[in-house]
Length: 525
Image (cartoon, rainbow, N blue to C red; front, side, top):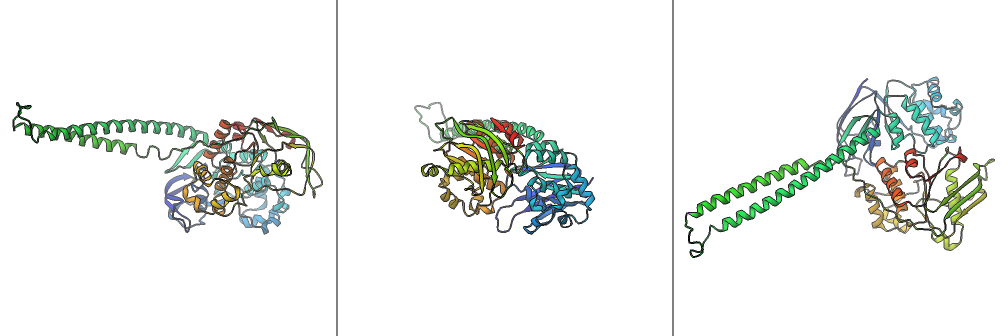
């Protein structure tokens, strides 16, 4: 066991006035299974890259261990190489048999090594990389969001594999994964860094208690400060009034007063002024004790959505549905049957490549190909378009006249300024920016081009666009990829409160459990 000691670590990207990490200090052990938690843009991936020595920084990182990073970099030309040929580039010191042992643990067919990397599914690519990552020993491994784009089955395999290992730090927003594989958490709070034993749920329970105590203490201090200010103001007015009586008096009305009374009044005024000073000192002390109480509290703003109510009960009806692409010999699936009724939140679940996103595209295509008047009502927050080579068999009825708001899983089309994006989509810029602020995007992000945002921030752009689009049906394709834990909770609360009609593809188990009124999975297995 060794230690990694980080001291006064400060880093900012070239051309940026803001520090991503500032004066960060913490210590961790290299045999821990450490979960790295924080909001999008807080510097989680940046920290892993600093460990890898990819950027220059101020401060120090002291350790005697060697680091390795997931995911490995894959170029366009690498996609045409067999996976086995990439082993030498990723981890030259390991031998093939070591990788095969890990592949067996990850329930993979060794044949995957002899196929072009680009032909492997997302789940297969992830597991091959993890097999290579864990093939060597005496390394501290840096794992950045291993479950993005993975289906439920692949997630379960990765979760079981990581739970059996140690000596890594994992960035993930998947609460189920963090609970099952981590024994410590490193949290990038709003203002501080904390290291704590336990998994995500343990930390979150402690945080809620700590935040409740901080809010209670803050309220107590505010009340005390209010009382002290009122008392100080009252004493100050009494002192001023008393002091004013020293100057001049009416001998008729105040026949019992003599010139010697001035010294008595002066002493009384001085005592009152001393009391005011005492109040002011106590106010300063209360303010000092109050400072910092709320600095790490996650102020999760309540989001809003304005779903429209459609006049029909059934919005989508699929019966004996089959879909295949023109160049494919077989259908992606056969005999799919489901309905989306008004007020339902239907989740499509299944393996990668089984056709879930294709179903969404087929529905969008049917909506786009209705009458011109209906087509004008369609709202797409993502980059969806017509798919010309898709052959749909069976019944797929999409209610006409429906307004649909769509979030694509792909963010690569996001380019240019926020202002231009709003103009292109017909969105209110002020309302759009307000929702992004509620998603905890700082105003400094608003001046960036969309392509320069982090993947999590790009997803928030798409979801914010969808939320401010009044619609009868919200179709979201893997909306939570790269989205931080706190924003996931925000979105869950929003859906449960407003109950919009939704059709969603999402693999986050906790999200499904919270929001789904119906899960369609059997046909995709």
